[in-house]
Length: 361
Image (cartoon, rainbow, N blue to C red):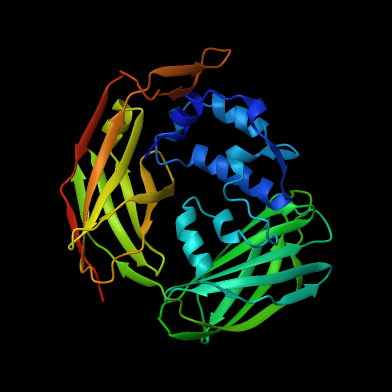
């Protein structure tokens, strides 16, 4: 997996070669959010990276964006068409969920606030609902929503994420964990109240925003994993294998020991993946988030799995690297570190023992 800053700092950019393109408020908001997450939540050791090139790119996020840099995923579709991507670093996983989602398109308006239900997907253990909100005033760049999803008469644990995408317009994603698995679910989903993130506006906003819909389980198979491997102070805990008609995704936790973290500037892992039929699968998306310096929850995505395969053979490849450039603030503080593509700074690569996953049919 390549480091974002290595790419940025090694590129010779001629801004005259770019064609400016108009973008929507949604696209601009998503790029800002995604760039910040990829800088600060990278699975590399994010706190030591150079910020020079990243600062340059953030500065370009004005009324237009340069097409070559940012429009690969920008689609000329309604504002809610890319909501699944907006909330997650691993675009491939949420593209897959978008592909298997069902349109809902219900509308509820109360107290000057309109909630539009866009689509939903149920994978057998999780219900994901996407929606947009048009408000009669600014509630902050994000705000709190208290909602509940009643699935087959049982209320699951629900988490809402909301972000501003335009003038008094927001996009939201509601994720509800469901204890039992069903082939079809009846859902009553409602918002109890909203709470502005503005300190001066902390009164609960209540209203009548309720929806009822039915969903079939999507063609998504989720297999829980328990394999774990550790070597040289680096651990990979495999957690889930998610298989859809379009792709398969490996979710895992990576843990770096404090001793390794202190010794090396950049730490990453990639997988060599093949099946028992000899097919080799190339990774096309890799992302995740970290709660601290040492622990990251990651997801790696691959093209569709051969239907006749019964096993996956995964060999983790770990890379430890030292930086060869250092950025300083005016007061002498170190603000970031970087590494060039052809760096002669110390590095270490090793392969862990292979992990074999029996694919449940």
